[in-house]
Length: 121
Image (tube, rainbow, N blue to C red; front, side, top):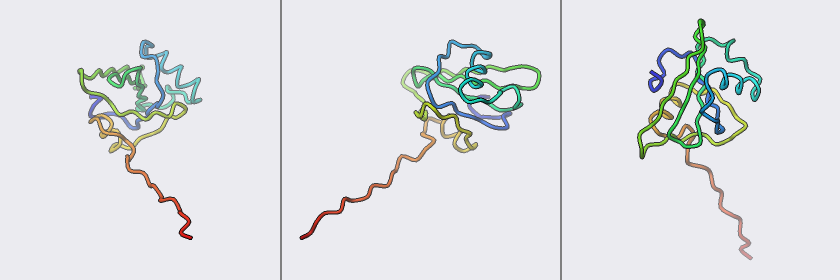
């Protein structure tokens, strides 16, 4: 369910590392304190967090009647390619979410590199 992304209206990835020992209310408080967003106001929005390793992901979603907590722990040798900007929480498209859950990076890995100008005289 969490891997397919079915049933969520929107997905927000919290990019920094979070202590996953927190429960649903603790993670909701983390979102409120660090980003000024009330996760209980947005029904159907999945907030995803990752822990100290790239193998664990935890998510919370307010479903109108209560807060649901999702946990996904990958088997040994597998890992997520999580964005590393710690001050960022960003909404992702369904395509980016699928790429993240399939083990790919959400961002492109090709960057523009410009050659240095050299003095030819």
